[in-house]
Image 1: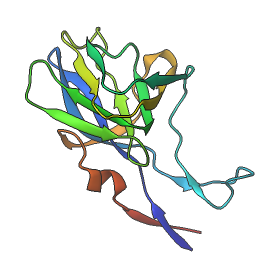
Image 2 (image 1 turned 90 degrees about the vertical axis):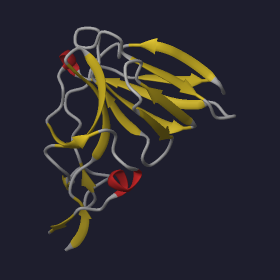
Image 3 (image 1 turned 180 degrees about the vertical axis):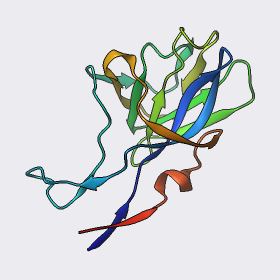
Image 4 (image 1 turned 45 degrees about the vertical axis):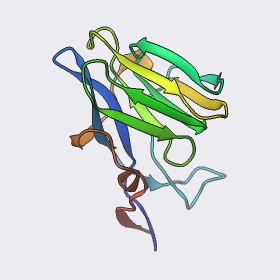
Length: 163
C-alpha cells in the first residue's frame, strides 16, 4: 500500500447573492487508484464531463479587465502569475502557475452581476488552459471554507491508503 492524496483542493471563483466570491473547494469524489495503461498504479481524480479546452498565452503585464467567467470552467495556469480581485470586495487571490495553479470559475453572468478582475503582473507570459464543463455543470464538491484556499491547503496531503 502507498499513501496518496485523497482529493483535490482548489480555489473556486463562485457567486452568492449576485456577487462573485472566493471559496475553497474539495472536489468529490476523490482520487482513486488508476487501472488505465500509462497511469496504472498511480492515483487520478475525474474532473467530470468536459466540453472542450483552450490554450491561452497571456503576455507579461496583461490586464484582462472586469469580466464574468464565460462558462463554468477549470482554469489551469501552467506558468506565470494571475492576480484575481473582486470589484465589490477586498478579497483577492494570487495564482502561481504550476502544481497549485488550478482554479474553477463559476461566476458566469447568470449568477454574478459584476464578475471579477484578472491581471497578469509578472514579467513573463502566463500560459493557461481553460476547460469548460459540459453543459455548464458545477462539479461535485465540498466547500471547505469561504475565501481562497491557502497554498498549504492546495498542497496538503490528506492521505488515504490504496491497495
